[in-house]
Image (cartoon, rainbow, N blue to C red):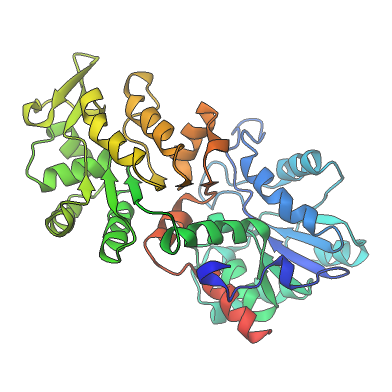
Length: 408
């Protein structure tokens, strides 16, 4: 498995006849009134792993949202949707590890799939703990008693140091599910063995993460180019002392990213020949899209997209790249008037020999365009994916590595 060859996967372990605790990420958009699931993409991504466990007894552990949020709810609808997608009855238990759950598991047959209640209903799951401390929680001690082996397929939560992610691998032999394996393999390939030139397109509003990624891939010679778009581009333009207008500066301040301008200035001073950003932009003026060069930027208008002229150098770089990593939109793509930059960049990126998309808004835009099959890999985890790309070892992956040594 590339850089992470010390993680075991389903091909390394025989699970037939075993009781498997399977951690997935079914966290989905939900209709607050009816409780209906509005998008089952995450369910579909996990189906491969669930089907591969047909010779085992499968207990699914997952969450929906988190305490205090409107969509923090029971998993009744999730069980229904999973039954429909799998074409067989799922046993839903409105309990996490109590006597009811233990009983259902004991009586279940090989091939049965059981879905436990939202694991974040248990307060311990919402704590940030080390693997060792997680293993001591009541939650992990009781969940572990129900299974023989733990499979983590929840890449979307791989960056969280929570008990079911880092604690279960401490107490049970733990392996990666098929989705986790695919994520780790494709994202690792970006660092080793991706066909060059490699271009990272970093946009959207998660500026601190994007700038961390830019720094990591430039300092380590992973990227040949970094193309900054969206708010990330505005930070770099401000770092180069261009005036980006009051509304765009206000947004940076509102998001708490003013301090990122100095960091961007430092990165740009070292890698200016590798960092590209549009110097011609689209703004909203008198309610309409107007295209201007950055030096002619009026102070009272927001930058909302790349202009046609600004796109030219961006698309040239993408077209000569063999690997493209795309994370974050190029503007206010939800509004048709300001979606041109995002759409053109997606089209160009989809032509690359090896293309990786960092989940979230970009993945949604690609799906809306019907371009999903044209990309090599679309990540299921926005936060986990970007953290992986900054070169950090994700807690879930570290826990699986540790388990494969302990239970070798």
